[in-house]
Length: 322
Image 1 (tube, rainbow, N blue to C red):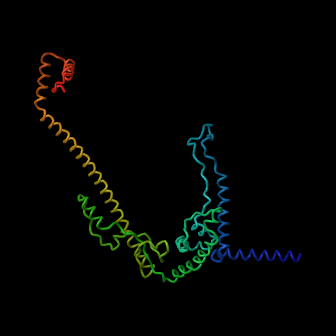
Image 2 (image 1 turned 180 degrees about the vertical axis):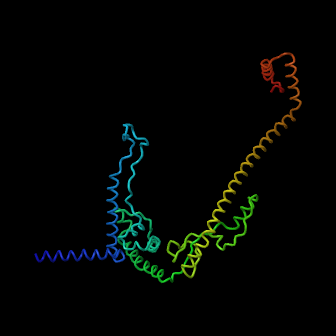
Image 3 (image 1 turned 60 degrees about the vertical axis):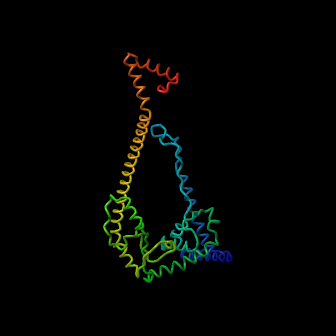
């Protein structure tokens, strides 16, 4: 009895240690523990998907309606719940212990570890998609880099950033104005960010922002004020750009239609010119043919007899009949 009590006591201590590590999240785990936690979460998702999919009715179009008739819209496939979870979504689960980092910081840590934040994980593919060896760097970055970013944010030492993308080059706009001279010219814009589309403001530059252009400010508060102060004017500018683009598109369609009509008239004119040239070139033969036709009609010959006469002359290789 004493030995059994000792064994139960040891098992309780082990479970308590695991619960303590889990309560602190994966930053308190080693790579094997983090891997096992992830696999357990994926197994739970898979089991939930099995239950949900079992409850889904088969939509094969063969069912009976309320009045005995067949249901309409048959042949559809059964909708199933996906049991895959993106790595970023997995770490946003409350049991991860780092969900309070938020999606942006978690994505930053994942990318810093050289991993894909949207890689699809399943209970049966995590062994090779994200093995135990891949978790060590990720845990270290979540623990150290995540804490550093949050500490900088709390202390206010991170500054502020506005991410943006540049608008079309001024040279392109000038070319558009030259090609569409019927449109009114724009009034000069005094907005210092009129050549930029402001996307978002951030207290720190993360790994996913590495390729984006940004404006840096001394504090996050200044960056926030600057962003919102230009947001309304940017919306007005976007509406003006959309209206101008619509006007340019309508003008282009009108120009294309006019050009199509001009091309048609030019072809028709050319066809009539060629016909006139042929008439001029064979004026004598045309006069002879008209004389023969008029003489035949004056003698009372009908059109059917006239056609027979033409056939006979063509058989005789008369150049006028040909």
